Length: 189
Image (tube, rainbow, N blue to C red; front, side, top):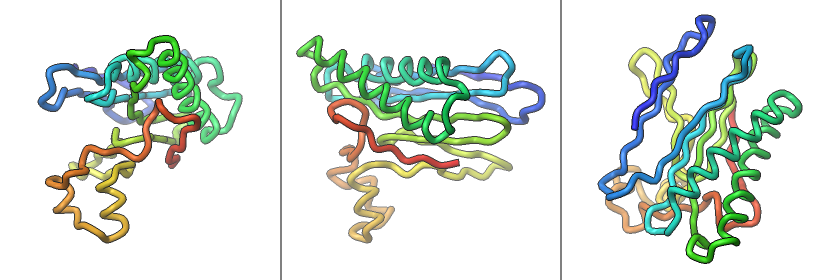
């Protein structure tokens, strides 16, 4: 799935999303955007349902819809940081409620990354290992750091970045939406 969104003329950027199931049979990714009528508020969300857990696609879809719905209802009422934090909490709650109604979905989880642009300033938040990259002049800069076991091990000096790819815990996440009562996210601008 690939989408390209053309921003307003005053905003010089090309925004796109691309999803790949990563060798899996099913794609459990969801993405979406909200752009206010006056184009002063733009929100872009990507969520990746956890493979190996029944309901990954439902979890990612619930997260995207809850996050975008939160921004549509509260586009300027709160600080950018509060909007990001509260929208992720809303997504976590939506997943928990859906999981509580269907035992088969009780373990569904997803990652999420949000890019929020307001008044020409960018803010972002993420949970898990969905990433935000900033690409300018053919230079790629990671704007998020994975909430994974291997990233933790790199951060603490226990393994090197080169050892991450083959590590047996490379797919284990420390933070996700779903399965937790509260959501701890990283926020930046």
